[in-house]
Amino acid sequence: MWGLLKSTKESKKENQKLVIAIRTIAGFTPSNIELYRLATLHSSKAKEVDGFKESNERLEYLGDAILGAAVADYLFKKYPFKDEGFLTEIRSRIVNRETLNQIARKLGIPDIVQSDKKNTQLQQVILGNALEAIVGAVYLDKGYIRCKKFVVDKLIQPYLNIEEVVNSNTNFKSKIIEWSQRTNTPIRFEVESTKKGKTGKEFIALLFVDEQPYGQGFGYTKKKAEQDAAQKTCSMLNIK
Image (tube, rainbow, N blue to C red):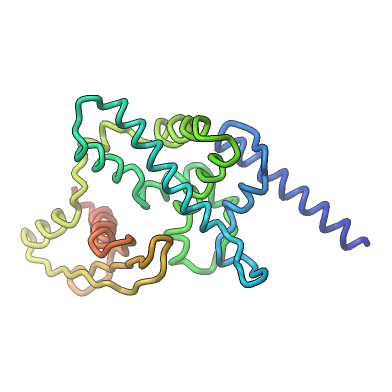
């Protein structure tokens, strides 16, 4: 009995901590805290019940779609005279993994996500995924209108300068190739491994500079993984 009471108290304490965190992140008190508990539970910490591992992967899938729709709506209204190609490109820059990881860190999501902390490679991808899962949880908890407001008011406007995003050159692969040719430094990309992601295979690319490993990139296509690796390498080498 004492063990059960202790477990109940610990559970309430954890729920209260999560309620405070979500209130800080989203600006409202969650109605269904279980959604957010699930949104912060990575499969590396999930327990299997009846052959099914309950983790944030389904919420991540939903949040990815809702986030894309909310950002598309925001850009559509902000740039009424821009064509579909422009809107698609800017949306992809906003919702890419590295951007979401950075926003997640600033929001304090590392403090509430439940994952295998010893897996350093996992930590490079897990935060943005958890943020997408939280978007999915907000959508189910509060509806699309409130969720869209959360995306715009709490994710985009505080942490992204949209004009800088629009004006930035994101073809980092071209940048690193030009730098390589200019400095006569050999580079090569290597697809390190693939693993199953939410939409199929996920590629992990490693960029070698003069046979030394530099940026490690992730993406659902080889091209995106190489771009991510190139972006990180440009940052490491201070290539503007």
